[in-house]
Length: 191
Image (cartoon, one colour):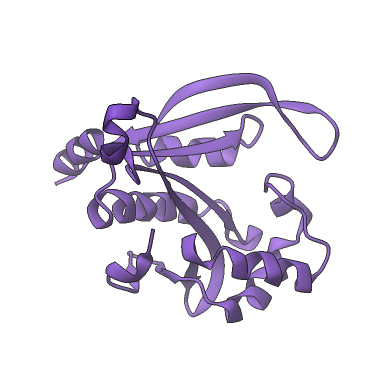
């Protein structure tokens, strides 16, 4: 998947999204390593150097989110193959994406998460022409679950104690999704 075929930056009412650059890592690290952020992220990296190494390896699917010239978030759009039967595997190639995000805690509670999630859906459906988009979060991460619901995604699954957290406990997870047809209906009703 390449963000190169899309027009950048993507502007919303309050946010600017663009593909991440290696040079963004230091600014993102400033809030990315805070306890309230890493509590729900897949990895806890011990240093700016380790964070930068990981960041650079994933530039092909990472976006940054700016507000007023400051980087307040990062997001991923991880395009993947949809499940299919063998005879139609080529049609399922690159047909869906998993989205995710992390935001600076100083801007939580102001609607930026929902604005970002809707922007990611715009990228996935309108920009990349995908069939399906999913988002997964720990069930205890109520803020992310609410963001996906407010963006119009539906909860497809509640997995019981399926994810081992770094605190040593097993947590439930939620899986949210939206189809391109649902996105089109949502956009039509918003007009």
